[in-house]
Image 1 (cartoon, helix red, strand yellow):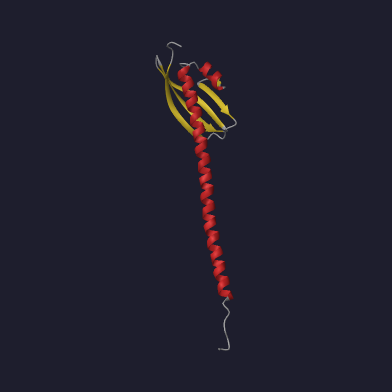
Image 2: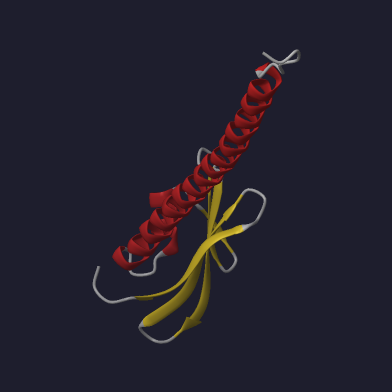
Length: 134
């Protein structure tokens, strides 16, 4: 036997520290992926809700043949000088309908939904028949 044998404990400790660092790095990457996924999911859910509100107003405009007073009563909106505006505080959204071009039988408008800060969530150009038989 040689007079001096080295202990293997420091090497094993170093190996365990490196493994802990590798797992910590992997968990940090996974955590970032989960946070990004959650944010993306919330954004998509908000966009889907906004599109549903915009489609609802569009369908009311078609059903009421352009009578914005009836549309505003149906969706709980207020009339503005160029259309209507509805707030949805529970969802944190504001919907506005702005009339654009009009012909004898056709009304064009832009429906936009923003968040409470004014950031655009979605908007769509619509057209519906006005007048005619109720």
